[in-house]
Length: 522
Image 1 (tube, helix red, strand yellow):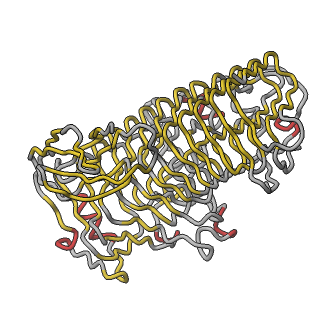
Image 2 (cartoon, rainbow, N blue to C red; image 1 turned 135 degrees about the vertical axis):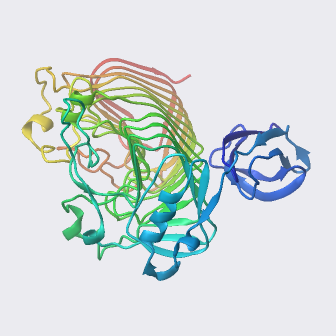
Image 3 (tube, helix red, strand yellow; image 1 turned 90 degrees about the horizontal axis):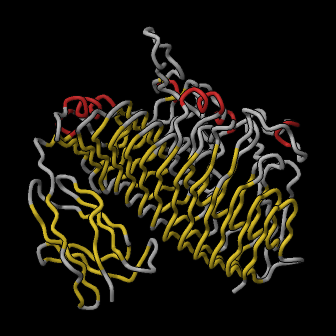
């Protein structure tokens, strides 16, 4: 048995570990975690949070499975100046009193390298703003329960003009554009060295009587996210449950080095725009051990619409997703569609997708611009079950104000100009997909800007015995498919190495305007 342990992050009172078990994804065989020889807990999760540690102390951590011990890892917790309990600031936690002012007071009063503790209880609140160099901990049984009333939420303006000729201040954003939006339930603006952690819950309390109701869906200002981080550095969110967000659950925007570990993100499957984690124009993002069950994309990498892509040119880069479980959602991992500054170096490894609409979902369109270059996307060691379409590249994505225009929808080649996006190299390896429904591989590039390079290696897609119709790509002219094997339009090179399609209806491969199609069945 090869069983090792890696420490992902350490706070003053907790740590996140990763079980390095070959072949495991979100779960593994059951094990015990020992600290200094004492069993702390039993788990089957590959990414797990260790609680109950003391500040500024070393611990020897080991795993034990069936009597066999792993090698030990020594961790030293951080120091902690003070802990501020929000109850001491007047918070009630009775599920009725508005505790916003008391919670915010504790955060503002917290000195550097200290902790704000929210103990067990239900704390009604509108929203909170973070500050740098603190830890905000939701203890077991603590619930931050949002008051779903836009009249009581602060508004973040989309753009504030710089008086000194520098870069404008853009605190508010919605779907890649600087527009007025309600502050996130937890908001960080230009903060750094912050941890939000604990065994508690952030409940956005959204439902179909308030934020998800049609009358509120397109509200101005735009709906709040559960956690919104704008131009932050070195922020970690770990351990907590986030549910019923009014819109996207966690939205890091123009951030550097953000970490999301051991989270549970949950919204009803029919809720609106409840993406799980959407890193937008971020650098160095790690998402590990997260369980998703949401009403939109589980993870979506973005970099703004055309104006922001041209103005800032900030590519979304170095995003690492591993050991996650996606149950339901429009896409397991999505790239786009607001992607005008491009995406580079996105890896998805050791994950499991269960009944998501799509596995890998790439969505772009004309108008995103020449800087919208999507490349370095790697899918490796992924298992899919009951996914409706395993792999989709859609260069005609029709959502948004101009999505159904003739310019976006035209299937004939148009002139290549500053508005033309590109899809570069994509690598998909070691994937099994069982119970597929609509389509296994559905790639539709632009005729004037073909998909440059896709490699699929050691991929097995098996269709359900009675597959259900599903529309794989949200684009004009794409209808429901049932058991469609491999469909490719407008690509330079597609290489299939040991790709097996089982149970497809009709011809296995349907390819047009593909310069080079290599299928090595081994």
